[in-house]
Length: 286
Length: 252
Image (cartoon, rainbow over all chains, first blue to last red):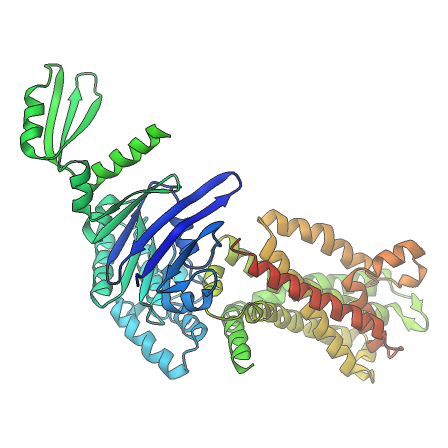
């Protein structure tokens, strides 16, 4: 049984398919990155998997539970950190956590113990009694993660967990995500920061215009498109990217380039190259 | 059943914490309009007017309490929910909790009921000073029951609008097009007996009309309008069901 399994999962808003025929498997214990440009269908997918939005058609199982037929069981098993700040801004960190604990029917003692545990785990102990509105963006994100972990979920959905954070705070957030995963939590995260996916994810799926266009380990995807990239910039300023399976074929290509090429860069392909190549190709196809 | 009560209280608990932080401001703003009505209509325009042996002040105080219950319960349940759902989107967190829809609907309405009751009781005290008859009515228990039912009904209505409004303008439009006319036309400031029959029939479709009638009858020790109490109950149930359906349809 996979942590997430979807079969032709689709969502239509008016005439537009936000997600179309999504077939996806996420394994237990992995950090799965769901990449895509803005409006690609990432958040709609998360909303369907977390029972907040009903699919137009298709099915999905989360931790073995059907998201349509068994939404309560799904909700009891998962934690969700939404893209936007979804905590009650008028309440303190601790009050928000008490609310989540009560919603999951913790006793007062259980809740107190778990909340203190999580405050320490997320480094929020000294901010526990501050209203959410007074916290920095990074602390607010940590508070959101702390709240989503109250009921010890097996699977955590993180929708753009580091959007809007500075580089230093983002890296601290990555450490926290890695620590959670090492402690046994499967993580499904959406991001449009390629570096984030490259740094964190065991496997990634790329969604574009509602359709899953590639899925696999970052290395596997790089192999598929080309391990080496040659970037050429002509005198008129136009850049051009070419992908090659190995350094030798890239070098051979460079040797045959015309003289009007101003700059030539040969480097290992990054996930960003793969992403641009795949989504670009898809745009051209459509 | 115990779980239902516990879940309902959990939903209410968060809103009560927020209300506790803002109680002075809430009370001050929610009482301003009814006190102005009391001064303008009760002491200003209505001085010297009598209705079936009652002074206009005795007549108008229960109506003003009814409209205080309406506006505060409506806003108490609707405004924060609307902001939480549409702007802060923290209502999604409640929707994702493994609790029943009915517990969410009732929990979110009860904060409106509490806000409505606090403001109405404060207005009741002000009204009792102006018109002490209120305190000595033998139908005081019915007054309190009708007040609670009014608060619950308008809290469910506020919740329904908070759940369905697509923008802040929608909330304002509803307040201006429905609540404001209801404030003035539902027998709060005048008796419906003198109103043309067609208009009177139309006004009987407004829940505040029944709320005013129940509260006035109980306050002035008149024959109690059981029909109006039943009508309020039907409105209450209808708004509750509509809220439940609205939440269930939320994801589709």
